[in-house]
Each structure stands twice: as structure tokens, then as C-alpha cells.
Amino acid sequence: DARVTQTPRHKVTEMGQEVTMRCQPILGHNTVFWYRQTMMQGLELLAYFRNRAPLDDSGMPKDRFSAEMPDATLATLKIQPSEPRDSAVYFCASLDTHYEQYFGPGTRLTVT
Amino acid sequence: AQSVAQPEDQVNVAEGNPLTVKCTYSVSGNPYLFWYVQYPNRGLQFLLKYITGDNLVKGSYGFEAEFNKSQTSFHLKKPSALVSDSALYFCAVRDMGRDDKIIFGKGTRLHILP
Image (tube, rainbow over all chains, first blue to last red):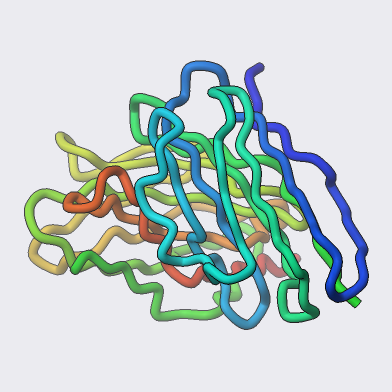
């Protein structure tokens, strides 16, 4: 049963530290999304890629967030420096050829 | 611009009763519409979709949704609710002008009361 995996599942860090979140999409899915979920803002699209190329990252704060796909099996989301307002659950999802998204379990980030 | 709206933040239904979670959309052209469910501390899971064909779409866990073009709606339904259906439900639409971008509604929390 193919799944999207994300690491770490939980991260607690201090303000100002760098945070790196990783995602392994399902093999063969060539479109990958990063979302952020908070109680206040709901589900927000941060960035997405097709065939490893960024299509849209307008949802990301550009000064501190960056997203990349070094290869087809790895997507990364970095925050540097982190701030308390970045505390959220970050989801990665990959898209199959039937336009169905498969979400990972999420990374719960707490910035103190 | 493509958009989707879920007018209810929360829906309460007694176990065994039928349930409806509402969704309306605004798109240019023919819509691709989806429902996803999120259980506590989990990622979203695909429930069902409408792309073309029969207006009544059947999905996972006994859910179905009815596509209504004249009312631009895609309401999620189930004939008999279970306590285990309690979760957060998201309606979504594919943004046809933006390379597979999927636009999600803000979500509706469904509470099934025993």
C-alpha cells in the first residue's frame, strides 16, 4: 500500500533555529504539494512542484521559507529562521494521474 | 478565479440519521470536484470526486455526493450516519487555469451524536 511519508512527525524548536521537513511522495506521482494547517487559517497551500520544478510558491513567506525537490523521491521544506507564528502542522501530498491527492501524516511543528 | 465554499463550520447529526455537508463552487468551464476527510492527528484522505458522467458519485465509507450544475453545488451525503464519521470534511476544486492546483474549502466539522 503506497503512502506518502514525512519526517519528522514532531518537531519542537526555539525561535531562530532552522527547521527542515522532508517528504517522500508516492513513486510515480510527479506533482507534489506542501500545505500548512492551523486552527486560525485552516489549510493553506504553500508551494507545489511538477516533475521537480516549482509551479507556484506564492503561498510561502519568501524571506524565511524555501521548498525544493532535490530528486523525484524527496521534497524538502525549510524555515530559516523559525518564528513562533510558524507553529502548525505541515502536510505534504502527491497527486496521482486521476487527480486524487495522497497526503502524508504531517509534521507538527512547535516553535517556542 | 476558481473557488469553493463550505457555508457551515460545524454540522451535528444524530447517529443513524442522514447527513449532508454542503459545498458550493465557482469555476470557469467544467469542474473537477473532490471531497476529503481528515480524522484527528491524520492527513487528509480522498473520499470521492466528480469529473464527468453521473451526477451522483459514490465514494468510500458509504458516502456519496451529488453534483448540481444549476446550483453550482456538490453536497456530501450519507443515508445513515455513524459515530465514526465524526471528522473534518473538506470540499475541493481543481483550478483549471493553474496547472493542477487544488483549491480547498475551509472545512466542515461533522459531529455524529450517539
